[in-house]
Image 1 (cartoon, rainbow, N blue to C red):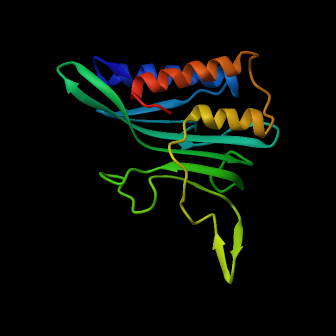
Image 2: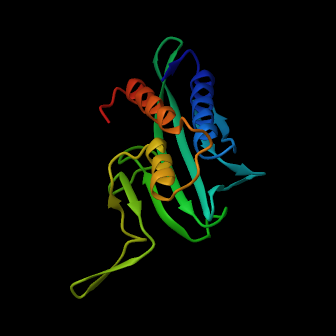
Image 3: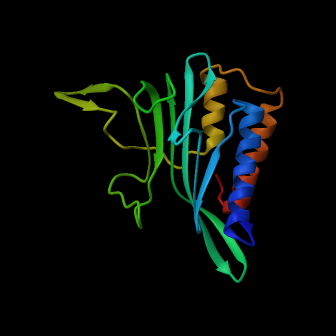
Length: 185
């Protein structure tokens, strides 16, 4: 996604995500906080990030750190610096959760030594004589888009969609993502 200013790029992306969310799983809107060429998108309650209810017993936490990268004079391109998606039992970070997907790049401000794209599961796995805590392990997952999280909520967890054309909207959004990022996902 490109625009003539960081504000334009961030606003277009926020509007796109809110439209997608409103037609698939929630009427809650993401709030955007902009600091120069960086922006943060998340659901908020006052000054605190929160999760929003998306179905009976499910809450979605969504957080994205974004950058408007200057590519030429008056031309900026959106770049994802980090993301965190969590399906939990309540609105607070401390509430029990079912799954977390996270992305932290291996370079720059958010430098990480574990797999950049990973998920966590709130369980232990016995492996021979070892007990592996999947809550603490960074299980490589590949890039996870919000469209995939929404599809998981609707198809696998049976969250009632906000509109009958939810699958069409997800597919259209995925096509835009491929176009904006030049990905073959």
